Length: 586
Image (tube, helix red, strand yellow):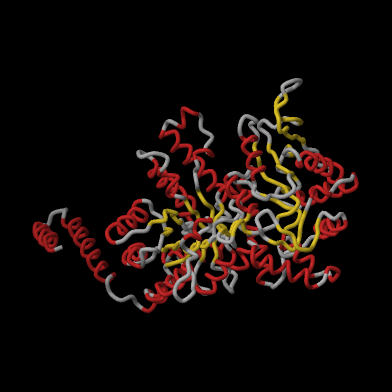
């Protein structure tokens, strides 16, 4: 200001007309200087009071990763985590487009942004899977992932409530490599949290959640949803604890050893396909740790069991990711809302101590009637039966003994009731066009189910079946009945033992037939592990491998529930069924 002041003095001495202008400039500059100095001083009482009021307004930008998740879950009342997995086969690309990286990437971007736009009101978080984006190609695969992340942020940045983004990258390394992965995930891709393998210890995790990334978070792989996880994660340690329990214990201690005032930095991934592991992990980790529980839907995980064993005592601390169950839905927005509501209904029932009407532990009226009718027909028997697997089962089910017109009519009605009560009924609209009965047992089953749907519910769908041997005269071929090309098809069978018939039917339908299998309907789900070391049932394996849901009229848990309320068959039968389920049940 001194130079301008000297100029003002010289101008004043000259008495020119410029003096007033210069003095004004000088005054303004000096005033700005004084104002700037005052701005660095402690505020007056009035300003201090105003500042206090402003800091009381919560901002997600001031929260760490898990605080943001909790804030988002509470705000929209949802535990749904929407997975973004742009499988090439879901992008509906032509052969030439499949060979073009730019076309693949643009299709993947559209695929993801369509899902985001439809699910944003219900998504507590988004979980893009890095592998599917990297597989799009070396030139624009990762940049497409960044575009998707930016799109999520752009949808919600206006109200300062960005939806948390969990990058599913499953990193696991140490030192500078881990630091480089963290920089890539956070600084370049702008993710809020990541999934990590903890098997290399704390020094493989700390670069992702400490220092300049202390506001970020990570879900550690603890007991994953794939059957092969039992090869390592269920190994017993010297204290008889399982390895996944030790991971849960370590994550709790790592959380507590860090600056606990800043909140938890670590959560755990525990698959919904292993309810026992979920319960054990929640017991070890306590209420404060968030659990990500994949496997509900196409992998066959039990939503009710997941909620019951995964929620903390406050009814929170659990995220349930759904990917294909949403992306393959005819109406994505409606389906995501349905998943949100299913989770909330289950949560409410659990918190209020009630049993959910449609849970696997309860039994509907049509299911009770079906069990009673099966017993009266000799289809269902209690006793001691050696199965093909070598197990000795306390019950046996032989659908081939439904062998009269009356029996088949009742059987068809039970199937129809279970279908109408299932996810194949979308608010009064059936989500399939044709029923397919695989030869041979499925032929009669498909016919009576199609008939019962029409007679009892006014639902008219097509019916088709296959021959075991191709016909070389007449119309020829192996398929008989309604055309299935481009149609949504429900496969009907009695039971799934190994799943071979269903898999063969699926391959046939999706191959030259050009059909779209949307699910499987069966009479009985034995709901038991395929092997002691494999916690997935045959039904769950079919749902997981084929990516379609399987609905049964009854299952082992409902059979057990039936016996609990019926003294006719004796306490010893209930005891044997309970013991069998405890040993082999999923």
